[in-house]
Length: 115
Length: 111
Image (cartoon, rainbow over all chains, first blue to last red; front, top):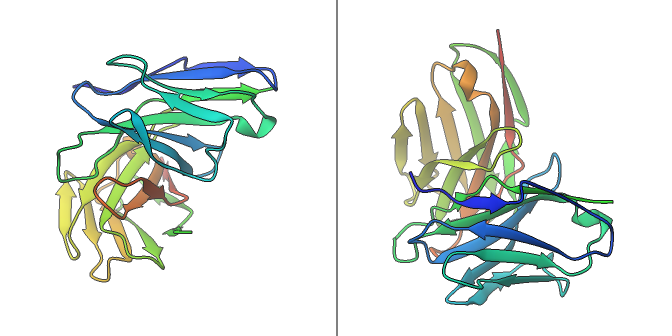
């Protein structure tokens, strides 16, 4: 069964450094998302992406964050200058655009630790 | 902003018991989704609901979309050890929209 994959599974970085989190969505999906989950808390929406542009973003997704689909398969989240409070699990999700549902399928996540 | 209130926060049950958890909101949602998350992994979609009043089953799981569109419940019958995990409800406003997650119900099964 096709699934969303994410790399790396764990990223440790120093405060102020740039990180890029990578995702490969399910191949026929056209809508892509990033969510984050601070340890022990709920999953929070960051950004949605369709047709090579951001559809919607939350207040968390400030100027330090950016997303890109550099080729036909990868979807990346970049944090330019990490802060301690960016430490969290980051989940990529994707869904089929033309379906009449809103079923988003999540990857296994990248655990980001900012020291 | 939109918030989902999920209860209970945690449950301790015996293997074989039935489980019920629910989710309420002050806002109307057009989609309700139930996910399960195991430690260190991403949420896995269990059931999706799209019509008010809809009752949908997936094996031992049953979920309903409330008539008011402001609530949903999930039932698990005859619980087994692999049911342990965190169950999240999530609501969506539009077909293309982000989904808003509840805070989760952590299910523990006693031996």
